[in-house]
Length: 173
View 1 (tube, rainbow, N blue to C red):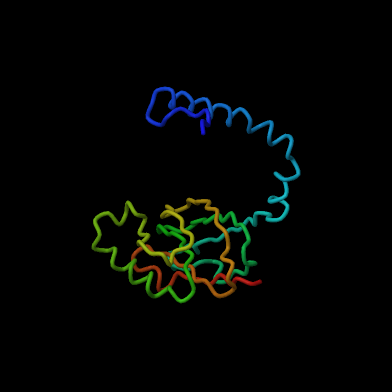
View 2: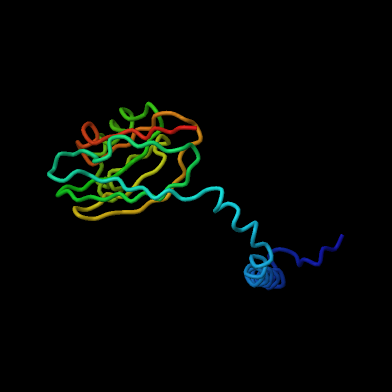
């Protein structure tokens, strides 16, 4: 039952692993050349949707786009633009979790690490998020739209913002 593979933990095993990794890396481009149709198929099936969402300027704590509609399972490249004088972030949440995640965000006011965490609370209800975006800045994130149709809230969790700064992503079949 000799597989030709040296015993783990030996110098010979380490050398064998390095050779396997080098061989795999060298094989990658030629494998891509021979299987071109398979490589292109996912890109054709799933075009990436370019989406921009903006904070409104003037310190009003609102998203310019209060409602978005996307197809379930879509791939999205979202640009969050902040032309405001305040910092903002963007968090996409599971349906029905706005109040819960908002309360977690409020609780971060007592967390000395909150700014380092970009005021993004720990929660499994968060599906996608940006960092805090400084005034006149922007950030790009990539995510997949959930497969389940429904209304997915999005909010800014900078202290005090989520009650005013929210919107809804309507996911359709």
